[in-house]
Length: 538
Image (cartoon, rainbow, N blue to C red):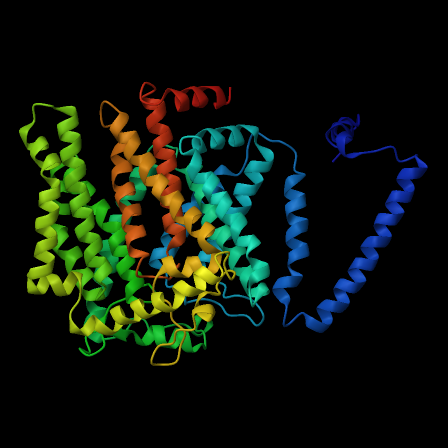
C-alpha cells in the first residue's frame, strides 16, 4: 500500500534491494529465460510422472516441495521476532499428545502416512525451529551456547543422523528407509534442538517434571478399568473418521495377554503393554524426585503414598522392564542422595554409610530379587516368561553373525527383515533395540546412538558433582539423568521407538539444565559460563 508521497514504495525498494540484480544486462536476461525454460520442462515431466505414479509414490513427489520450502526458509530475511512462542507451544503439545493420545487413532488418507496428533504437533515445531534458525542471529547464538554445555551430545546426534542417511543405499527398501530416516530427524533430532532452547525459560522444566508425574497417574487410572474389562476401554467408542482398517490396529485394540497364564496386560494409550511399561520406567524417577527433593511436605507425602500405586500399575503391564525400572530408579536415587549428603557434609555418618555401603546394599537387593519368589517373578520372570526370554536369546544368536558379516548396517527399518525371526503367529519380531540398531545402522550407529545418552548421563552427573551446592536446575538434572539411564536399560529388551521423541526431549532438557547450572555457578564450569556471557545477545 503506497502513501501519497510514495514513501512505502521507497521502503519496499530498500527491503528488496539485496534480492535485485541488473535487469538491463544481457546475461541476466538470458539467465532468466533459461531458468524459466528449465522450470517449464521440469513442471511438464513432474506433472506427467505424478499423473502416472502419484497414487503409489506420493511421498517421493513431495520431495521437490520440501526442498522448495527449505530454500524459502533459508532465504528469509533476519528478524528480531522469530516464532519462539509457536515452538514452545508445539513442543509441549507434542509431548502431551505423544503420551495421552493413542497414536493409532488417526486419519488415514489413501497414499499418505497416517495423520496423527503427533505429526500435527511436529509440523509447527519443525517449521518454527527452522524459521528461527534462519531469521534470528540471537536465537542461533543462544542455542549454540546451550549446546556447548554438552558438546559431544549434539555432535554424536548429528553424526548418528549422517549414518542414518548413509545406510539408505544398503537397504532392501530404500524408499521406506528414507521415510523412516526423515521421520526420525523430525521426531528426534529437531525435538532435541527445540527442547534445548524452549526449556531454558525458568519454570518450564519444573512444569515438565510435574506434568510427567500427573500423566503417569492419569494413565494409571485408565489402566485399572482396562484391566477389569480385558481390552482397551475406548475400543468400541472410536469415531468413524479415526478408525483405521489395519490388522495391526485391530490387534492393539484387542490388547494382549501373558502366554500360559491368560492374564491381561494393560497398555493404556500405548500400542503395547511393553510400551506402557517403558513409560512407567521413565516416569518413576520423577515420582521419587518429589519424595526426596521437593521442599513442600504435603507434596512429598502425596508422592510417597503414590509409590505403591505406581508399582501396581507396573505390575499390571506385565512388563519386567517396568518393575526393574522402578527398582533401578530407587537404587540410583539412594546412591545420589548418599553421595550428595556425604560430599556436602563430610561429618554426615549416614551419607558416608550409604555411599560406601552401596555395593553391599546393591548386592542385598540383587539377592532379594533372586531368592524371594514374588520379587523374582516380577523382575526376572517365571515359567510364563520362558518363551520371551528364549526368543531374545535366539534372536541374538541369529543376529550376531549378521552383524559380523555386515558391520556397516542394512538400512533403517530393515532389522526385522534381516533377522528373519518370526513369532508363532508368523509375524516378524525383534525384541532388543540394541540388536535392532546394530542391524539397521551398524556398529558405528550403535556407538553414536547410545554414546550420546551415555554422555548425557555423564554431563548431568558431572554438573552435579562439580557444584558446591545443589541449585534448582541441578535438582531437575537428577531425575532426568536417572530416567535416561532407565531408557538405556529398557532398550536392551524392547525395540519399539514410539516414545523416542519424549526421550530426545528429555535429553534436550538435560542440556538446557546443565547450561543453566553452569551460568548460575560459573566457578563449577568457567568455560561454559564464559561462552554463555559472550554468546548472550546484547
